[in-house]
Image 1 (tube, helix red, strand yellow):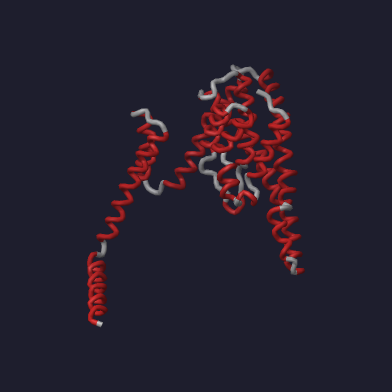
Image 2 (cartoon, helix red, strand yellow):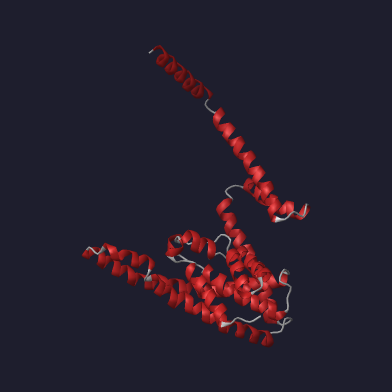
Length: 288
């Protein structure tokens, strides 16, 4: 698999869309197009191998499944992971001749994504820093009363920042990085210590993502029970994710109905009193 200039430019364009305010801000950009799960599909379409792209996206999404950016603090840039890491991982997997759905390919994809994510953090802060320049222009327009120029601060000038620190780095890294990946294939054999280390580290990375997710949703030991139901169903009944999602939805509806029933039974006197008041009010209205 090779990446030509047109494909590299398309990958750079989608990297720009990930955080641009023209894409409904964070909702459509960062939290939809920028996610590795969606980025894998986009990269698969651009590079002509949808199955491999989705497989790489799924593998990388596990690592960053609970990634949040509180106060703009970014530990890893998912845009770089999605549109630099996934294409390079696809090239590495195809050049090694690995099975796209195998564990070895997934471990290699996770390792490549993690390395690129750290590089992408630098680009993320570079975009944010350059956007401060456009904000200073906006404050001057506000002071002068030129409010008609403010839309350019939000929707026009940031494209320059993304072109310099998102589009160009993504285009060059994916184009020339593919050649570097192929060179590494010849320099690092599959049975060597370096490649085995990458596979081992990549295999442990999803534990980090799952652990971060558990810290957010588990407050007491019994919270582990519904979390482990999905793993139990997959291991014992060999159900796929769609089937497990439907089963979990049924349990969610049952729990919701039970909680609503408990809430309605807590204050029966109040409920009866309110009903009697309503009845009295209706009688008064009829008498009037």
